[in-house]
Every structure is written in C-alpha cells, then in structure tokens.
Image (tube, rainbow, N blue to C red):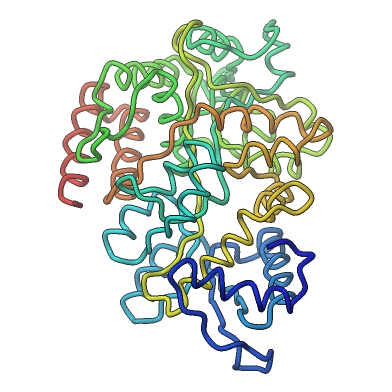
Length: 433
C-alpha cells in the first residue's frame, strides 16, 4: 500500500489482503477511542534521535489508518531482553518486538517469536542481503524484517598515519601490525600516549565485535554451522588471538583504555568498529572528524576473500499477539513499501547514520553527497557474516569476551584462551537446544 491511497481505499483493500493471508479481518474501526485494534511495539529506541525517528512513521501510519493503530513502548537496550522475557512470562507481551538478532534463537526457543508468514518470508528473502536474512532467521526460518544492520570496518586517523610515514590504511595483517607499531607512542614511564591499534575491554562491541570481524576476515567462525559447538579453536582463531596478543605485548594496544573516548581525542590510530560510530564521532570531534577514514577490515593475506562481522536488529511478531495479521501488515508497510524509491525503515536508519540490509535503498539514500565513511559499511553488506544467534548465543558471547580479556591482560596464553573458550562455549550452546 502506498501513502497516496485514501483511508477508504485502505479500508476496502486490507481485509482482502488479510483474508488472502489466511486471516479473518476484525470489525471496521470508526476511529473512536477504544474502537480500533491497537498494536504495541516494544523497542530500545527510548530517547533522542532514535525515538523521534521511529515515532515519525508510526504517527504517519496512525494518521492514515482508522482500523489499526500502533503504540510504541521503549526501554533502554540493556533492559530489552529481560523485558521481553519477563513481560512474556507475565502474559503482558507486546504485539511487535524489536530484538537484537543475537537473541533470536533464545526467543524462538522460549516461544516468544512467531515465524514470518510465507509471503513476508519471501519478501524478506528477496529484498535483503544474505547477512540480514541470516540474522533474522533461526533454523532456516525467517522470523522478522531486518531493521538496523551494522557491519564492521577499520576506522583510522589519517593524521596519525601520515605522521608515521604511512600513505594509507593497512590492507593486510602484516601491514596492520607495522602501522600499529609505527603509530604507537608511550611516555618515558611506559604509559600509553597513542594506541596504534585500539583493543579495549570497554564493551562487547569492541572486545568481541572486532575479534569476530578479524576472525571472519581470516575465514573462521565463532560457532559451528549446526550451532552446537564453537569453531574458534581453529587455525583462524589461533591466528587472531596470536595477533591481538602480539599487539598488546609490544605496546601497540592498551586494552584498559576506553577506545571510544581515546580515538575521538586522537589517542588511537586504528580500531575496528561498527558503522553506527560515525555519527557519534562527528558529534564528538567536530572539524577534526575530517581526519577520520574508514577502510575494509584487513585480511591475513592480500589475495584473501573479504569478510567481516555484521550485527543487527529486526522487527517480529509475538506468538501471544491477538492480532498477528495486522501486526505483519504494519511491518510490511514500514519495511517493504517504497516511498520516493526507498522504504520507511531505510529512510529512518539513514536519518540517524545507520544502515538497513536493503543495499539498494541505502545506495539511493546515501547517494554521492553523503558521508564517504559510510560507504565501506554499505559495501560490507555484500560479504559480511552474521553474528551467530543460536540458543545460548548471548551467554556464549559473554564467555568469549571473558576469555579474550584474560588473553589481553596476560591471565591466559593463546592456547589456554582457545581451550577455555571451546570448553565453556561448547557446554553453553550444546545445552541450550
């Protein structure tokens, strides 16, 4: 349905669409308070630009539709998974959920997410990239429309690289190491002034995200294809852990530093992170942002096959919703209908400096005049590897982070970190099925 359709046309057309999908249409609403079907949508878009960006299309839908209304609810991201599970157990689950895709396996196992109807699954499979579809699927079944997609790439400070006599960003791991050692600086007491390559224990996005981006670039995977064991104890995993340990041992990385603050203040030459960071860096750095560049994640060897990590969110429908057909119709309108050549969700994400998994939409929205630092993240949609979302994935990620930090701080050797990760993660993911 396009925005140009009148309310009368929609009232006549929607029941037919619902019946075609095997849904009986409820009574026609009059618009009086309490009469329309009211769908609730729970997300982490709780404040600032994200809250405003989501509310815009919701208000548009509500203005165009008398029979079905949408009401948003929001909590902070750190409370989102717990809120999903607690509300569901209490019989208070919302109609539409906006989960981090890492949790999808857990939510499916708990009976929270409803599989997408065939026509919606077909639309998602056709219109979105493989990483986005993979993130929104569990066991080969699609459970929702991908929304915010984050791919990982290499941020670098052009000024620091130039000062070290480097012409541009590294393309291989040997070049990455050389650049890291040449740009790192310490004072006479051994305190870090500039990290050549920013490893940080600040949060999952840096500790785990950049490690998995390097692992994917080396052709490795964190979790096996069947989801029942870890695959990090492999030549690729060993190579990544060896690389990170060398960077720390030789003073090019200082994991105790908050890399988000340090990079913005010119105290980190290079770091791997996700595309959402560009908007934050612009706000923090002002005119100094012109010295920020973005390049693909370096490969172990120049002739390697490019790969990186992607993470994401999706919008799905609760198994407990009394109005699933209406909920899926709203999600189709938000995520599949085109307005001036792009979907509303793609326009929403572009407005806050993010991406969706619809590469055609994002190329149109970014055009040639947008921030060039976003284009490597857009290009990476074609080769990114989705974050594993098997049951137990959140705990597996936490266990991986714990072992990476033990490696970086010298509490574990590479061999010990690999063995410990394999043992702990295998136990977690195998029991979660």
